[in-house]
Image (cartoon, rainbow, N blue to C red; front, top):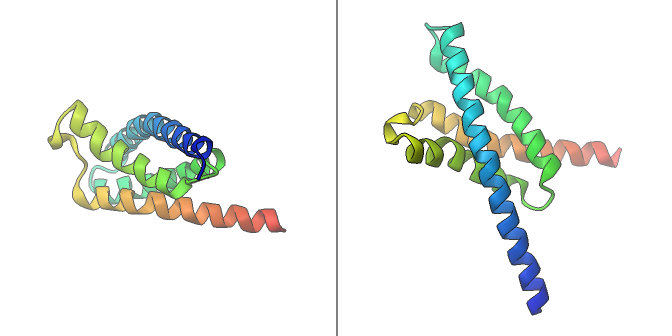
Length: 128
């Protein structure tokens, strides 16, 4: 690979990481809001309600990630999920601010899966 191609790839990686980090912070804020809404809406079934809200939000997030990231959307989704729901709360508040493990696992698994599925759906729609 030529030096120019390496520079372009490095620039693209840095640009994507910076954009993903900003999106991850916004993702963190939205997930926290959804969990608070779930607590207010269904105090008896907080985990289930939170998970359903987060699944819906992850579908929307997967759509946005595939819309704006044409190169590495699934990697971006994984990065956004980990930084948004693990790194940001751990750095800002501490590890005690992390979501429950089942909810955390569901969010971290569903975001890349929905992003991948959204990419496939968009490819199918573009072919028709």
